[in-house]
Length: 393
Image 1: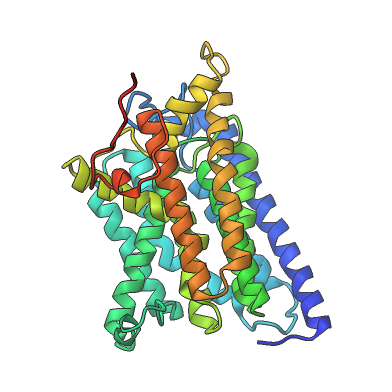
Image 2: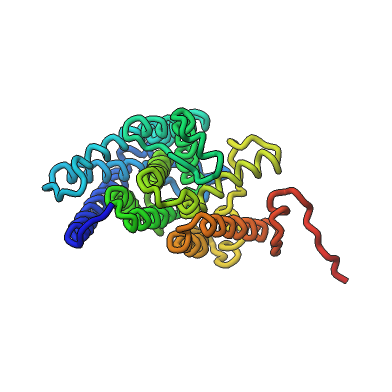
């Protein structure tokens, strides 16, 4: 896809306008949720503060996903209303179809936020269904994985569709897993969408870049209320919606741009994906427990308990400071590696190398947090070998 200088200027102006519309709409919706809390608190507040994955000190509305959805819907109305600039005809219809596809994931998560009674399996099926529906409505299916031999199977439509739905479900759930501290899921989502949007823009794919911009805008609008004090939470519905949007931007980037390798896209999305895969492995293989049972051993939780609480001991009166610092600590190493993937992952070998570095860094930090000292043997992190330690004399 090639555009003239005038086209690129028009597209940039259009994307800036869409980002601002998305941000303002999401911010207003978030503030409305917070300001009307007393009218919906019986349903919307996260009252359970003693669970394995709870780190807040007072009830907070966990229906921030409604703000993201409101922002996207306002952008759809804006995209339909504004004069066409000639780049993408009827793009608002594709946005609307993506929102419709997201509904199984979003609704299953929102119902969990409101009732606390939707099982993990039902929510997983909801995210999987959203991936299937997106394949059907907008043709968002993976054409390849850039793995020799495996790519031949993607010539079979059922294989491509099922693999795509599985990937969408995985990314959606990965954002939900890291949504444990103020701003962590949202800022991670903004970083990933920025990387994906830049890659798509460099390839001349203005449409996918706009999708990324919309996701960035609605997330920042939410973050203005969520971070750092945590006045509103994404909730499962918001995390699934954000994860779905990231997944679809990633899938469409690969599907529409043959010059972009799938490993680069995976490297950009690496942190939450590594977190969800390692969490399943850790629970199922190392700890011999049900992967669906929550525990307090996710990476961001260990950062809070083993690093931030030691660095910033407090009396609980300003607990939000320590909560917010978790995001700073995690993003300080995930963001640079993500942007390295954006700038240097344009070949398969380099992208694989960057992904391997991210996995190694994750395991090294994880083992350091668990054991209290550094160990750079990945086999120890995977529980394949006991750690060898020299005895002190």
